[in-house]
Image (cartoon, rainbow, N blue to C red; front, side, top):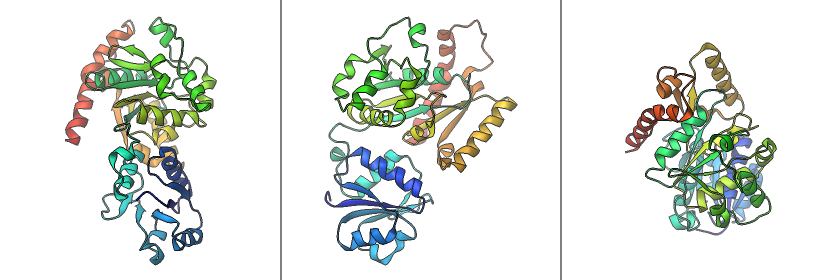
Amino acid sequence: MRSGMIAVWDKDREYAAKLSEYLHRQNSLGSTVVLYSDPDELKRAVDTHQVSMALAGRPVADSPWLVETAHLTLTEERDSGGSAVYKYQPAREMLRIIAGFRGTSAAEENLAWGPPAQLRAVYSPLGGCLKTSLALVMGSILAEEKTCLFLSLEVHSGYRTLFDRQYPMDLSDLFALVRHGCDVSGRLSGVLQSFGKLQYIPPVIWPEDIREAERGELKELLHILAQRCGFEEIVLDMGADMSRPEEILTWCDKIYRPEKDDAFSLAKLTEYEEYLKVSGYGELAERTSRIPLSELAGEAPSMKWNQWQRWEQMLPAVRRLLAGERNGNA
């Protein structure tokens, strides 16, 4: 089933808009994705046979006029079964369910580029919680067995000083390629750098490049890197200076949050989770693996330790974390 349109409606208009935008950007289902805010307009489209499939929340999903049209019911209940789909699961999994329901082959779904990379984000609203260290160590471990890309979205990464390197091209250049509609996957080899087996894209120099890219180029670039560049894993080091990190986190399969346990830090995290709820991103908190700093660093390491010693100390804990995930999914 590759003709007609995919219609999207939900009483939560913000959710419906984000879902339809995501499906449109994937461009892998072979149909135009149309967002409807008025159920009567959706009914007219169904009655005139313009709709090949509908993604609808209740009460529209239960309407008699929708029964004979292929549709999935968007629900807030987990494990509903049948044609009901849990609204707040990772968007990538939602895409797989829709493709399977429509009879789309795996090759068509992924535009013949192979399975998409798994996106892992390390993010915390707190500073000084070994966020970048966790992301780099995790990426290095994953790169032992898979093709893994590390992507820093920090505005002041320190890479050029830490690794004592100057880069002819960096993330800003990729944003420019996306902005002008140029082929990114074909030029990526000239940008990639290596840290052991882990590949990475040199971060931006100017903070404005990240902040401006959040309006469009960043999401498009992530889509290209995940779908078309042959990576199996992508680890994102999410910068605290991003204006809307929650939008990027909704695209990710796994989210990790290192946490301090002092009173101020716990209070800030409580307020952050309240903000997620009231701003419509409550499901992110449910999908986040919270990692106490003591599990990563044990006893507080000496400030005289260099960065390499700190990373080596973290290796066993991160290996256990990833092994636990594999065992949990077995």
